Image (cartoon, rainbow, N blue to C red; front, side):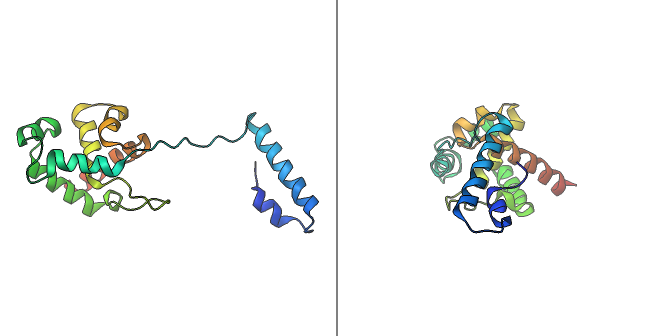
Length: 158
């Protein structure tokens, strides 16, 4: 469909309800006939991002974490101070990693979640599904985080 329904409504000369109904009906027919079915919307999957952030904080980044530092090394393939230096550098380089609110005013993923997904994918060579189970981040956000993380690290180093 080349023009939206709202755009077509503004283009018509008369204000009659019959004309508006005709345009609405035509627009629906065009949409259905263009792909053989009505427009599909994305399915929303509730991920408790805030709880996932709290979990990773209590597991690895609290004053007394659930897992000792040797487990941190095993999971992240680096020391805790090195991870924090990388996180600080990446956050200051790219505002994508700063936590903010989405369109519905919910808190988005934290920088800790985004950077952890990128590091785990690089360290283990795992898929997005594997990372999503623990960190509760969608596939597109994981891929975007990985791309931006690699670009940020390269920019900071070189």
